[in-house]
Length: 417
Ligand code: C6P
Image 1 (cartoon, rainbow, N blue to C red):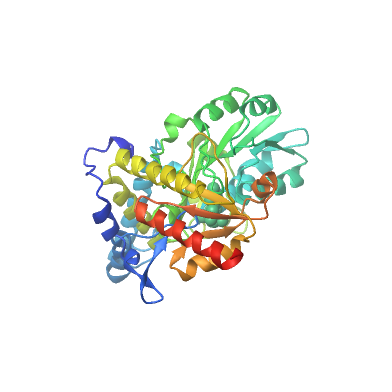
Image 2 (image 1 turned 90 degrees about the vertical axis):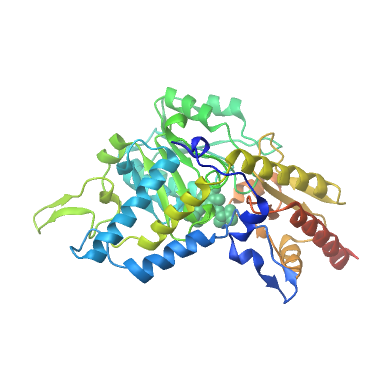
């Protein structure tokens, strides 16, 4: 069952949702309310997540899959319960197809080395896009170097959307892997990913989706999307840092060699031979991030009780209101104006370096990200060294957009006079 179809979704009430996030009550420089607009970097955590992690350490802390004692059994149940929650969240057919990882970065490196490296050879192609996060570029560059395969890149248009005609033209029998971002962290662009997956599959490519920025905003259904792999980062979806998940089709994961060796991923070890464990444990060497997984499960429970139709409407309102208010400021250029966007606004102010803008905003209690957002090719495409990025979560408000606009007026006065 996906989030949208969950029967117990309650009405979305912004005030009570904000009450669920303790950090939103913080004041900066003793008087200014915190305005947190850096959700694409990492989102804040609701009390339900903080409590689940504390409860685990206070009452159940033990290693998993290793002990016969009561605490280990409880910890194992909680950890495997969290895996089932991720399975539900992604609508994966089986919990064996959910691998806990540190985040999307680790998922992509795992796939590049365990899936792609043994498969690729000279003449093969890996197709990515111009709007990828570095974590979906560098692992593929590394594996292309190791195997002799070539990296191909779908170009961006002037609005920050992928050129779909060029994408179709780049697909061929040589395309062994199609690895693409679902929602761009630097631009907010939402790609027509289901259609792109279908096209890539029609030439026989394996499809790998970076869902780091989609999971906090939209219900994800890997069966409906039809992808082979889908990666998410917990910390961007209201869970702790250092935990994420990789969905992979059973048949593919089963055929892959392990990514790392060690405890937990084996059934039997001797100096003559080692037998690997079954899925999903084959890909989880060493003591896992148990509390992180439990926190991710709690975050998924928290998200599941929200009304996602209302959440989406609210985030779209913040995006549209924000873009309209910012476009009224002089000498401000919004970078990325694709027709379908998540609640992310990247922009460039004439005569004001993004780092200066971010620092001055911070003094007013406003947190935005400045820099290249680990997407340098996007910056190169728009011919800017960096942008300021305001990224909204469902707990943000129009008042916070107004605070940002006011803050930017102040920035202009300070920097330009
Ligand atoms: N983007 C941002 O400020 P990790 O760090 O492994 O959890 O996620 C990496 C990653 C992969 N894909 C996308 C689309 C992302 O946005 C990110 C992380 C943060 O935009 C930190 S650079």
